[in-house]
Image 1: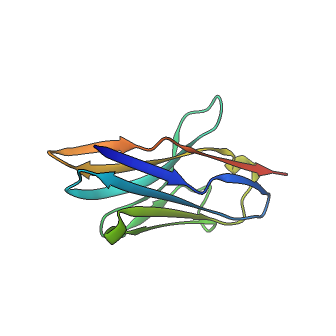
Image 2 (image 1 turned 120 degrees about the vertical axis):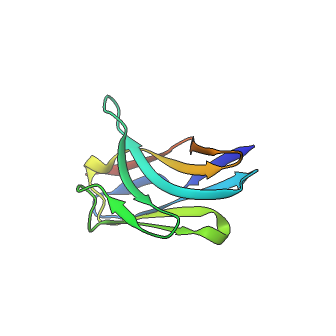
Image 3 (image 1 turned 90 degrees about the horizontal axis):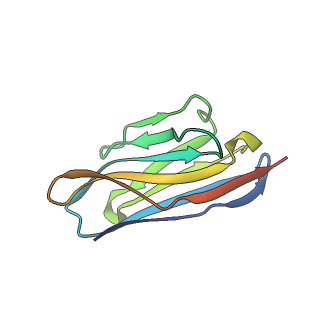
Length: 118
């Protein structure tokens, strides 16, 4: 009924770039706030960046100046441009979206692996 489809993960060398995408589809009245989270093995899931429906953004201190979050409301799609990648950025990256069908509910994507080699 509601699906978040993530893409763009992969293997890059330190200093390289990747662009992640997350598209929401299904029976959706509106998509409100969206965000990217990441989780490395043995560690807690952490918020990387978030964006409101109006375009206000927030970033984790560790990615400020390197990552840029954006969205295309007409396509219900969110992006994460990741530049100057570091080995510590290696994690599974998850898309999260607050979506209204009958009521406001948080949904998660399946995750996409990002691996940064030294």
